[in-house]
Length: 416
Image 1: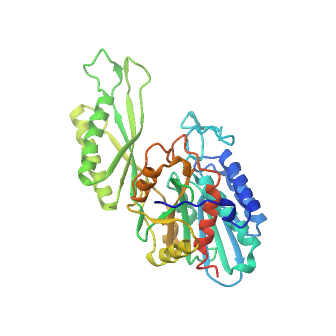
Image 2: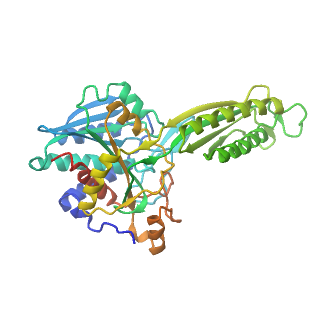
Image 3: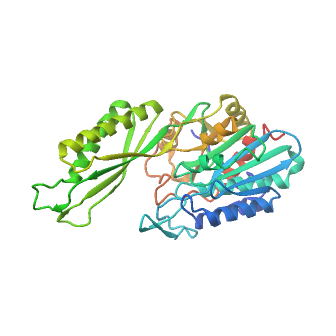
């Protein structure tokens, strides 16, 4: 049966340190900001790094923050966390829930840390605090990379373009983690692919508009879009690519054909080339549908956010795995790559260093019965537990404590 960690207060040295980590997590959880708008979050992160004695550089690739905590000669370990939240209205009912709203594309939306980036930030900051207070126990340099705009897929590239790793010491390894709806403190990782590739498409169909009762000479853009998406889904299935429609926009009246309708589509798969071929196929399909349906303008297919695969370095991963197991951290193999997207590979490519990326459970163990734990152990997902990006996603308060410990234990092989 899957083991879980129990005593969170022991994870990072003391009950006081654990409570500081929880308080920081609560503060970050209340103040989410969307991609590219992380001004307050970046300011808080920078201030905490300064308080820990780190040298800090801000406004790297937007609101990115870089911190360097030096402690004599030795390897450089990079710890990465993401700054941004999501346009998801929180409905957890937590006393520290986000009630923030903001304008996005002309409409008001709720904003929350439904992906768990608040846990990641609080864990890195808490790890730095711990290291700053225990300098006699380690040697080397910790480079913290707080990345903006991860959800939009633009932040890592922006930081690299703005000189990340040119002014800071070159890392010997980059460590990153992501919470997910597994039992608290349980880590899953592999020495190969952790995340698949993905690309988003925006499909826009143009029609003529008009009254729904006067069908002659009009184009039913909704019907055209549905037909195109159904065929595109079949193409994706044949190519072994996941196909999901995440949003549809268009129409304002029950008795009027919209002039345009737009859909946002996410494609995910293990093979980047298969994704590229599928995008080409969907684009060709759109041209055909435009002509067949009498659209006054060609159907537009625009590629948007793209995430490359995330692959762990085998040698570095083995070092981290050994350290985690020796440290008593419940650690299990990842049976198949996650279909979530992350641009962390852009950072390690620019740095020229190995990556070790893992998932860490963030949910109350009491939410999982014996069958659910067994399913997770087999690499399956249990039902009934809110996942990342859901309005109800609510990491346990101790998730930040265990995530902090995971970073510290994972970094030990280098910081000795």
